[in-house]
Length: 233
Image 1 (cartoon, helix red, strand yellow):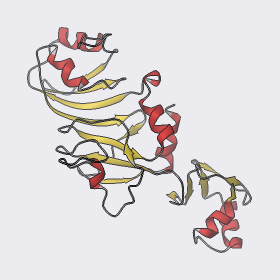
Image 2 (image 1 turned 180 degrees about the vertical axis):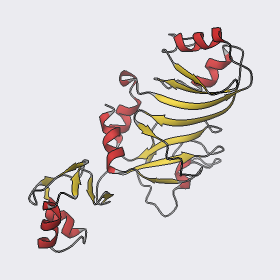
Image 3 (image 1 turned 90 degrees about the vertical axis):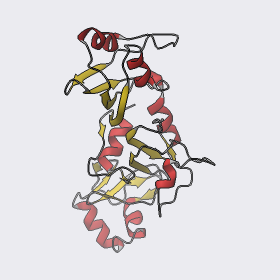
């Protein structure tokens, strides 16, 4: 455990007396909550932010990646380009992707070294909602839409959990699922004699993809976004 004012001084925010003054102004947050006591005790797991900027002297790191097509969701591979190979000039030791997106699927992917949180985010018991932007080959009938939303047999032990579909037009829609079976959305549409031609994850729980990120770009999560992640579970 370390005092908050000492941590800020070690991060070159100012002298010990200067950082005490800054803390008392309420512009320093711990886990997204303002702390005004200079002697407040923090641990390595706490997320500290000064004027909204996370101070990266911590055990755990969290990034949002807009995964491009053509890159596999893995930490390393002898033959394929991986999502971690996109992290230029960033220490990638112990970082891993939370969950998987198919090679041809784009969109939101969380990259972290927080193993316990990653495990919880992927645990089936939490049923975290994941929303995808989907383009399909054929028009989707009301009957097939109902089948997809109510649960469908894709060859697993149980039917898929209820899904939610929001149509954009005849060939595009948003689809929200609360599980992550292998190629799940593609397999679901195959079961109604249709085909996914483009797939992009746009949100996971309360965390939405930053649309300013181009495919292949990433950024650290804000203190508020990290708090959202931790509140999933």
